[in-house]
Image 1 (tube, rainbow, N blue to C red):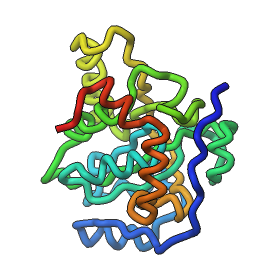
Image 2: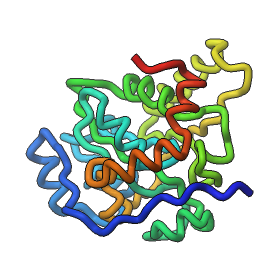
Image 3: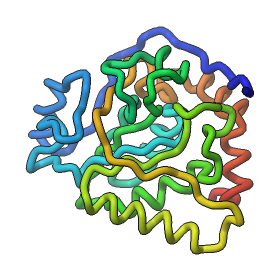
Length: 224
């Protein structure tokens, strides 16, 4: 097995600040539990329904946070783990590949400014949808790409988006990104949150050494 480039582990930084537009969402974040279940009141109130949250996996969650934070209408991103059965997994357990979880990001967005369909459109060009064994230099099922749907409508849109990409003829190989039901989402350790902002030099060194942008340009063309 190819040994992935190790990501530097920084010291714990400031508390992760979530940008939330609705006061009720702020109140919910004040009591955010360690695990966010798909049907948890903390993520499915009438003011912040599943349609206003989404979970994506595309390899390194530092990179996924950075990419989604640039999308207009995204309020916050949280690095974490989902898809496995082990409760309260640690980074060491997930990165070792034995917990069954996938590195992922929880995206909170304002439906008045953007839509789930637009998030899907932003997701695809920031991943390698043709590789089932990981993403870029990170090898292992814990780094594979996936879309975790939180409602029947998200499932419908995700499947339609994947089918459209496959039918577009852009790739000769099949699109292998999985579409899975969302389960419990466990926020990652604090030092992982906003890593690209708190440690920009280390983050850019990792991203460059991992070959992420070079592979994305090969797959999708140069970004405008």
